[in-house]
Amino acid sequence: MPSLIRLIVFLAVLAGLGFASMVALVTFVHPVPRPMTQTIPATSFGK
Image 1 (cartoon, rainbow, N blue to C red):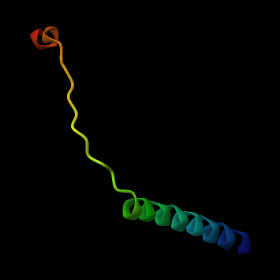
Image 2: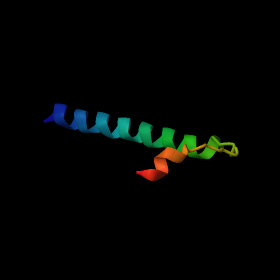
Image 3: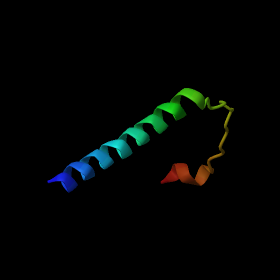
């Protein structure tokens, strides 16, 4: 039973680290919007 509790605590700590890293990415990384154009060939409209 103690090994099961240790496994659950380890998985909870791992999930907490993953959640904290996602929050840090959302908080500190700001994407720079850029204009984007993409040409579509006229032959693809005929399908």
